[in-house]
Every structure is written in C-alpha cells, then in structure tokens.
Length: 564
Image 1: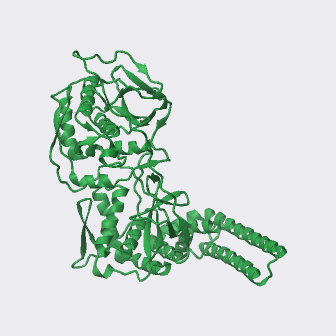
Image 2: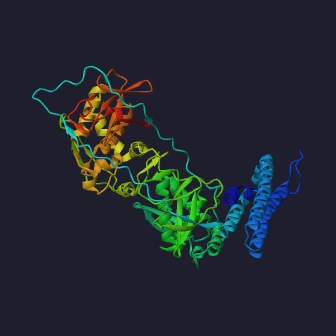
Image 3: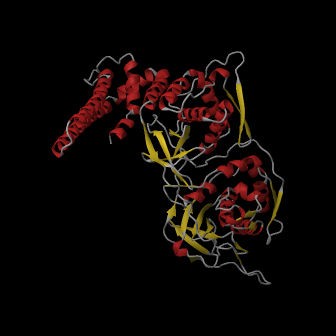
C-alpha cells in the first residue's frame, strides 16, 4: 500500500519542486495558504516519519526474542506508525489540493525548467522504486468454428429480391468503440537547439518509409551495466538539451506521416537501433524518447537485458503482459516470465491506443494491378492497386480489443479511412460504375462485387491463424474470408453511398447491414429505433435483405461503425 502511495506522488513532488524555485516560493499566500517550501518540507517529513517507523520496528524485531507477546507489540507499533504516516499523507494531500492553483501558476512562471525538474525527480525514483513482477499469461484471441460460405442456388430466371421487411430477433446488444483522442504530447514543447554548421543525421526506414533524425557522435553512449543506478545516470544525461533535436525530429516525423501510436512505437525502435545498434543502449534511448513523447512507459530488467514496456488501454491478444496499476504493459520486442520493473509513473503520461483515425502516410510503392469483376454485373470491372509498403505495417498490427469486448476488434479494422491513393483510383472507378443509380441498385452491385470478385478461404489454411484484413489488404491478397469482406464492403458503402453501417457478428460469422434512407425491404434489424437491412458478402449470389441460412440471429451482436 505504501509503495502505491509513493508512486502516485511523482506528479505532486515535481510540481512542488518546481514551484519552490519560483519567485514567490518563499512567501506564504495572502489568504493564509501554506507556501511551497512549507509543503515540500511537510512531504519530506511524511517520508521521514514513514522510514523512521519502519526502521524502529526492524530494530525491535532484530533485538527482541521472538515471542508471541512481543510480536503482537511489534504489529501494534507498526500499525500506529502506519496510521500516523497516513494522517500526515492525508494532511499533505489536502494542503496540496488547496494550493494547486498557486503551484500551477508558479509552474508557468518557470516553464522552461519544468521538464528538467520532472526528469531529475524521475531519475531519482529510477534509483529506488523497482520491484519484481510476474508476467500474466497471454489472452488468446477468441476462436470460433468457421461458418463456410453459402452459394445461393441460381435458377434460369433471376430470383426476385425480398418485397417485405422481416425484422430479425437480434439481441439488443450494440457494440461501440470510443472516439480517438489526441495523441500524447510532451509535458512541454520540445525546444530545438542551434543546429550548428554541420548537424549530424542518422537515416533509417520504418515500414519501408525513409526517415532522418539529428543524432551526432557526441550523443552516443554506452550503458556500462544493466542496473538501476547506471540507468538513472544515463537518464539524467538523456534529459539534457543535447537530445532535444532527436526527440523533436521523431515527433515531427509522427506528425508529417500521420503515424498512429503503433507506427510511432516502431519508428522509435528503428530510430534507436540506427543510432546505437541493437542492444540495451538502443532500448534505453527508445524508452526515453517514448516517455518524453507523452506515453506510458516502464522499464524492466531480466538476465542482464533491459526491456521497455508500453502501456496500452487495449488488450493485445496472444501477448504476455504485466499489470501495473490499472494498465496493461507489454514488453516491446521480447518476453520474460519475470521482470524487475520500475513502476513509477511519469507526469501526464497516456497509454498507447490501437485506433487508426487517419491514413498512415508511408512512402509509396505500387503493387501490380489486380482485375476484379462482379459476376452478376459484368460491367462492374475495375482494377485495384495498393501500396506495398503499407502491407508490412498491416502485418505488424496486433489484433486487440477495447474494454475487454472482442467485437471491438473488427471495428478498429473497419473504421480506418481508405488510403487516398485507393480512393483516387479503385474507389473512383467504383463510383463511376454506380453513378445515377438508386441506393438499392447501387448496393446490389457493390454487394455482388464483393461476393464474387474475391476467392474465399479460411485464415487457418492461408496464414495458420486468425487474421483480419484492413480493406487495402483484401484488395491485394488472393484470398479472404467473411470478416475481410464485411470490413471492405462497409468501408465502400460509407465512402461511396454515405450510408451508415453496422457489422453483425453471428457465432462464427461476420456480415453487415446498411441503414438506407430509401425504402428498401428485406431482412433487417432494429437498433435504437433505426432500421438496418442485412447485406451479407459471404452469402454468394444473395440480394440485399437476405440472411445467410443457418445464422443464429438470437445470438448476433451489432457493431456500430463510424460514418466517415
């Protein structure tokens, strides 16, 4: 309990330390509040009291005979010391809250030194606040029995589509995912240092994309030993302005390429290895850059190796992790059953998000054109070309869920915007094919196109495991399954027709449904008073409004998608 209390005080301690250096630090406030110096001393007294109490108890244990009576007295003394210290802690926190506005104002007055003060305090914690953690077993990606595709029997005459609505008895379970929040940022803007006559650069690639950052010979370092003091000493060095340009350039690359958190994590890994090679030094540099960028980060030690752990609000399937506080921490680039971890938080840190709210701007390498054609509408014939460099990013992207709800997995794939290059080629060509048609006529063509232009195959047979595709991947790879088709079709409907969509998760199967604004009949589900008509891209040859046979609607769940 005491360790948890101390680790939560880093932000408060840093603010107090900074405020104490400001011009008004030695004056009591006009309304009788305690000064920053007084509060700092109060906090120090609190820690001293805690330490002295523990020391006295330890001395009693070592000097007295081990009797039941004395042991009870020791426990009573320990309880008294703990209560006294807790009261001191509560007094301190009460005064801190009362004086927070004053601290914040002082912080602004000494803004340039704020980050330095924080890093100095953090380095001090790096020398002390480590303990052993056991890894939690990986959470396996849910596996369901695959439902094979169904080909609707075709007669000589085209079968009419449904003429009446049939509301399916779907469970009233609607899955949503949170909106993407702004990416983490440093606790203060990173000030560039004078570039000099000939700044040194390091070149590297991430997901086939050329990058460059400033990093000179003078910035190179060695980690002499993998222990807390050596790590703390180098953290102090890294926190000097000498590394500002390196951090500034990494953040600029994140902005220029619109990299999501996952891509930025890989960028820092590639950059650190380009600067220092593979090893503990590169891990420490990556940990520093990641932490200073505003992300939740912890460092761990095992078998003379340094690990960087990234905190995530998502559960990443099939990866071992460590639970620290209320966050999952995943070792980057390796696993260990036990780690000696510094659990101290850094101010204003935020967890990594796996959401992809915008296109990732990788360098472009066009794939060979792929011809795709609808069986029922032969004139719907288009070519698809994708960015081959983006494929390595998609392959690295781990399946995950939010709020421990596995249905959110597919929404993250479906909500990623279609890359601009595909919008200007493939999507533009598809838009021409449905120009001037009603919503129903256009949807019939889009549905049959996805049903028949792609070859169905199970993930286990192709990849050896379950793997969902981003829309761009489905356009590239020769095989896809039900979830890939529904993700692609939902993206096409939203972009080409501007209609709302939901994914429908049946046991072992994923389909979709569309909220038409025209009067379209057929199998449908009612969600929040709105009608969504089933469109199943794996029920091959089926019309809009036809549900694939054998689907258990009573067990289905609807997954709302973003309409952009």
